[in-house]
Amino acid sequence: MRLERLTHAEGLFHAEDVNGQSYRASTVIAATGRIPKRLPVPRASMKGIHFCSICDGPLYRRQRATLAVIGSDNAAGQHALSLSRIAARVLLICRSRRLKMDAAHEN
Image 1: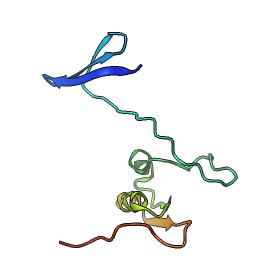
Image 2: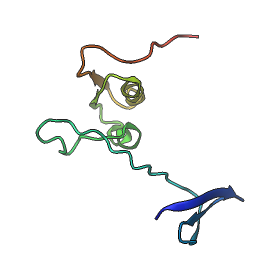
Image 3: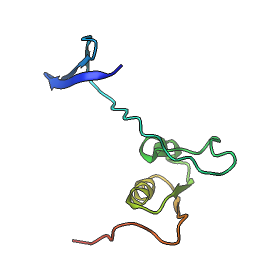
């Protein structure tokens, strides 16, 4: 289904698709279709490899898990920080020679 219009009124979302069909819902999930990069390693699709720390990170709550984030940019740093509230230990694995994150400043 491809939406033409999405509005919010009186506590409900109102949507209309390209064919003129109307829908109402209290919640909307915007699935934008972003395709994650797959690791160029054998068994990269095995159980335990996830692509969304927000969605899949809570699966490891209360398990004293060690989780790993692969990346070197700001997004990788943000994912590692959010997972640090869930996991006992978070590893940030960087494939390049240096991190490409912006500097953090305390206010």
